[in-house]
Image (cartoon, rainbow, N blue to C red; front, side, top):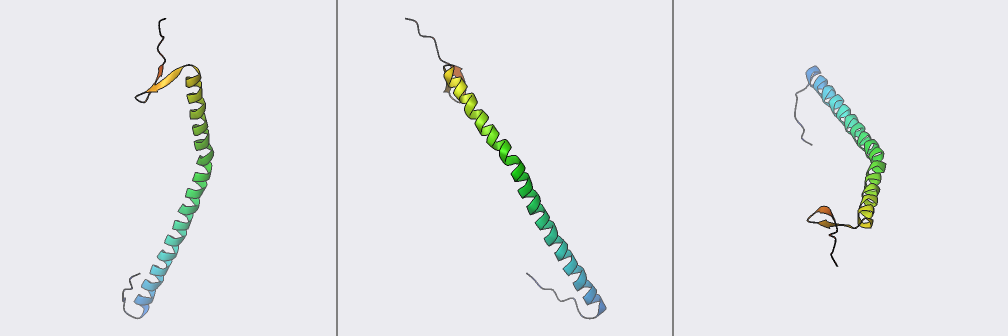
Length: 82
């Protein structure tokens, strides 16, 4: 933290008060944003888990239907002639 000399007297005291007040509100705002971020993360976590589970189910279904991944794309297995 850097200190700046603002002189003495009423003006300096007023500046010090304003500076301290701003510092206090910035600290409160930072705490609020941290709480808000944590709240949103708590709300999002079940949705992310659901997405992972849906992906697992979709992959299992595609594999069960005979599909495979080729260069990142799902494709149906080729029919082999006998």
